[in-house]
Amino acid sequence: MKQENLKFVIVGHVDHGKSTLIGRLLFDTDSISETKINDIRQICEALGRPFEFAFIMDHLEEERQKNITIDTTQTFFKTAKRDYVIIDAPGHKEFLKNMITGATLAEAAILIVDAHEGVMEQTKRHAYMLSLLGINQLIVVINKMDKVDYQEDKFNKINADLQPHLNLVNLSPNYTIPISAQKGDNIAKKSDRLNWYNGPTVLEALDSFKNIIAAENLPLRLPIQDVYNNIVVGQIESGILNKNDEVLILPSKQKSKIIEIKKWQQELNKAEAGDNIGVVLKEYFEIKRGDIICDANNLPQVTNEFKAIIFWMSKESLITDNSFILKLATQETPAKIKKIHKLMDSSTLKAIDRNDEIKETEVAEVEIQTEKNIVIENFNFLPELGRFVIVKNDDIAAGGMVTATFSNHNNP
Picture (cartoon, rainbow, N blue to C red):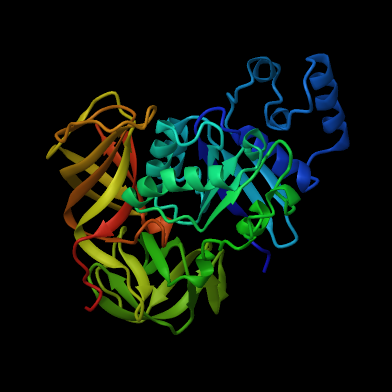
């Protein structure tokens, strides 16, 4: 089976070297054409500057002149182990929105800190953002070590300054690496100028991370879209379904057996994640849209209360206890916010001291109560059953992801 891409995001305070690091990663993995390198070299010469690796990313003329990143892109490179996708997210708001609504799914992160400037307020806010999103594969890079003469003491001080805040937001870096993105130290090759450091390079650290488990290797989850003449139809979100498998239909907890699997008028012995199929069950109950066919031996959560993170997109605020429609996979139910635990401005990442209302572009950690039991998974385990939208006045008002449940009815 083809190796999945590993998607990661680089975050950090402005001017701490994010674009330069991305440019260096692309350069050192031969992911940039010689023509483009020559173009950038000519631009740098015309500006009277040394070669700027940031210009590999900042390829728009306006960006070159202002020396800032203004575009959101996905950039690709590969190592001997696998392919990578760098999610470049200059706007916190856009990144949070994309992560929560599923448009972007980062599996790992690099938090970059300038060795000369040290830990800044935005560094701490970005760490909180990573914790909020449940990204637990993390590299901290202390960049611009060339600006502090590659001093080990300076590296140790910044690491010591950062660690208490990471502890506060429950982040534990897998690696903390001293680098110079501009000079290429410890990016693809170990640096003699940092010979006091014995850990991996940035590329070696990335290669040690794990991909999110492929959907077909997870337990069976088949949300039912409809029922036609006793044929149950839907798309398998995870797992593999075989003819004659024993299954459980949730939330009703009825047991049954798969008699037939149909796909485009063909009968199959097996179907897997991503397949749109129809199935015939041995025992036919009152099955309806929104029910979930599951592996009888490995069940999801069935609950009417759970914790979540939501990104509010509507101009009309959401008041605690106000009713809305929650849609998750093919399930749909009235619901309400029981409690707001934390509230954050998605642009500044600053905490908001309010617990009764969520306004446009705010991110909230909340408890949600649904009118009826629904079938869910933690977003980090299975995004398709951990991602939902909130509908208010017939419009999508928010995207959300499940972070924890309060009750577990896994033993029917």
